[in-house]
Length: 465
Image (cartoon, rainbow, N blue to C red; front, side, top):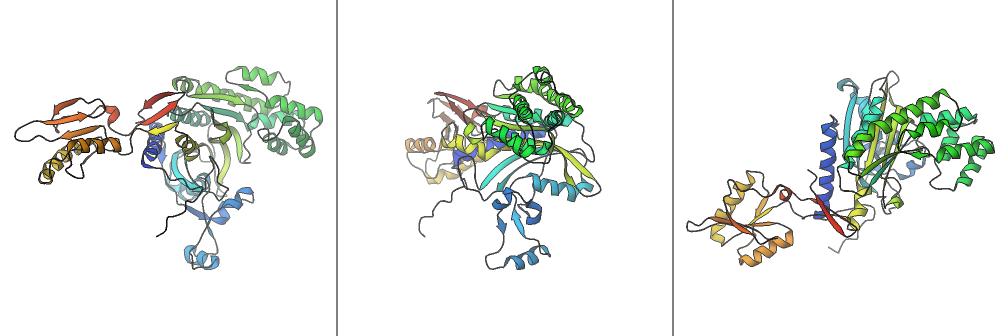
């Protein structure tokens, strides 16, 4: 077979990098579970008519069919109807379908987390892949969902990401009620269009956005300027309320959205403080989130030094994402791009794994006849949850130590003979001591591969478990 050609947009990680990804996923899962979120996994495919919404994303949907089958025959064979199947491009669409299908078996409010791959047929580039892993949390209610869940979801994600050794993450928060009420209070004819144009401020200069507000939202030049004044407000404390009120616009929806946004800032303050500076939460009144189903809290997450990636996560409140015609299931959720965040950090050496293998001990092999002895030592260590492996061949001990070094295994175990005690050697320090496989234990930080964060010339090794 000829050497395969790599496929762009489908990241495959080497073992040490994969260990980092697994530790990140495990850390996120632990935090979510500590807050009572249950894990679900949805299927990889959905009917295309459920995925397609008539927007730009429709061009990126991967369609599923057998090589020898026509689309029509595939639909008939696989679903018993004429519905074509596509790969899901996020975890929100399949989650909404999951809630509708299983509502009779779920207890509401339903708290779920989901960490799975998704697929998009877009042009691959840094931070944007055709296959990628996302981590989502959501709380969904039945007909109603109290606002305090908005604060809760935000706090949980702040805590989850604050536990990771990533570059500083900034949660930029806004509220759709606030901006809708402000535009309504100004008297702008098309509030929805105004939100859509303000959302372009990260791509276009302010003057160009002002022109779009006039042309497409029916705003006057003065109203457009007031919209831009609101969009410049960025604060992380209660001065938010005074800053917005100082603009002199009155509206009941604006007041409600402002109160909710202030509550999010207050509710996240202790979680931000506990993150030791790894996470911040800030009201940013230019954040709108382009998707139309957001109805309240909205958030975008940015990573310091990697602003070129745009947001690495986001979400918000949606009051009618799932609806079966009789019951509405409002919810609030946040998605974090695991691949979008980690792949660039791993490629640049900002993050690495402390070792490529789970083994913390290599049990040396004196000769082939003594393999059963070495295997018994390994079994005794494994029985106590210490990952280990037996040397593949009985080479000189120096070569076996070098083999362990190449694999990143920190300890080498030498079984004793003729009544001598076993010995274990820390090959990093050179320290060697007598040991018994029934009670010896390595330092806790060596038990599993760790995430090593490299920043500004220093190394910070943190065990995320």
